[in-house]
Length: 496
Image (cartoon, rainbow, N blue to C red):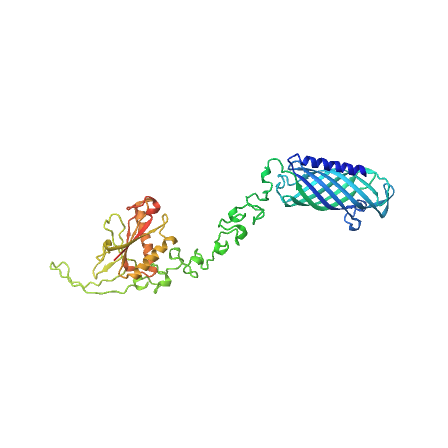
């Protein structure tokens, strides 16, 4: 027995000396262990009555990512089969003996970078090696034999801190001499000692942290430690790309908004406009009218239209204009035209659109008509054209490429215009649309007038008398800005 203890102490001394001189990973462990001789005899491997507790100590040496070398020493009490003449035993009878067990094992680690990551918190391994044991009568001064065995086992190391781990291990020890096989199970703690493996620096030993998913966010503060993410998302991925990490996203696979915890906004009327941006959330409408419908197509949404099913004008709250009759006596001394009674009817369904000074560079689209009993004449000019000679203020509203929809970011400008008109009822507007030089000229002129019309509609739907404005579409013929973005605009001139 003294021989086994001396060999064990010498090995521990050698490994400790090496730890002081090599840059490697060392570990020292202590475990509570149980040894069972009855299992291999009876094939009942988990008969707890035959278990006797003993002490197990070991020293481990890191070799490379796949292999560790371990020296293992166990001593304590066991129930040993009662022998008549080896290998014959008295069935069911076991004697109280003392065991000294020493072995050297080679471990193959599964966290070697091929199967599991080296930095894995849970690190399983398998092992084998060669060992010696001596079993003596407990409390009796008798000699004993030294027996040899080959262990086969598996273990699991769970790392709690960089310097502390927990170890679980089970093994079957196959006897090579005149003794018996036995099993051993243990649980204990492991202290990680010495330097770090080659390739790491000594200066960051104290700062070493665990980052299982290698996303740069340590497991301690990583809300998704096993799924690579970003620091901005607290270590989690953002699967749906809505700016909210999966750990905090109630709908991680569908893009949503922050206010809805990552889920899409509700769209009650299914018109493609979320309820939080829909002015008519329960009635299907159009995007250009902020989600409200315009049943009669007169540019005035139904909720502001007193005649929602009959096209009308803004000046009459969406209802058809009231006819205005007057009698004009026209005398023609050439007898080519007789005296006629003309009835002038205002049939406007859009604002008055008067051509600019240069009629070659803008769409002209008057909607004011005079109905004569014998003929109809459509004006392209308006005798009451608004002049910008008394301009009070100029407001520029910018649009997206090829779009005639007023961006949300520009609506505050239109709200300011409405406030100015409310405070000054006599003021009128010149609304002039422009485009960039992309596309053909004729399409651009049409788009510029659409932009001007959109601005007029917005103002009319929010309280402006539609007759207060004149619209122009200049297309690309007035490129004042250096960039396309600056030319995609509508200029609103407020005049007295």
